[in-house]
Image 1 (spheres, rainbow, N blue to C red):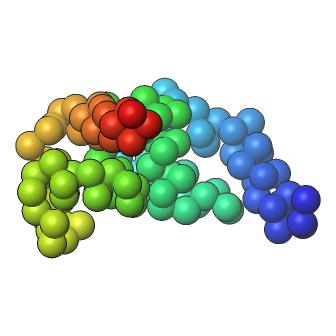
Image 2: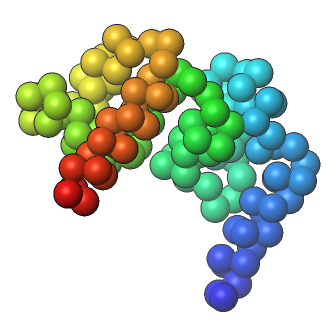
Length: 116
């Protein structure tokens, strides 16, 4: 494994051991704070941070705005092929307080349809 990957993996492991990635801790702060804390770990970018907060910590009301397949699925479902990411966030606001769960269900359905 190349050294940069080893360093990032080590940083993620240390963050987990230090409690930075603890689900209770991440759910106890505002979503923006949780995402920022996770993104501060070397090797974790916006997409991965959203996965950690949504799926790892189980935060129920986060719209994963960096998940390209989800954004494409929402554009398709809502019939808005040219919608900006910001407009998709506005659509997702209507899913509150369960944006995470709606996003997971949309992605799950898209995977099911694609596999059929």
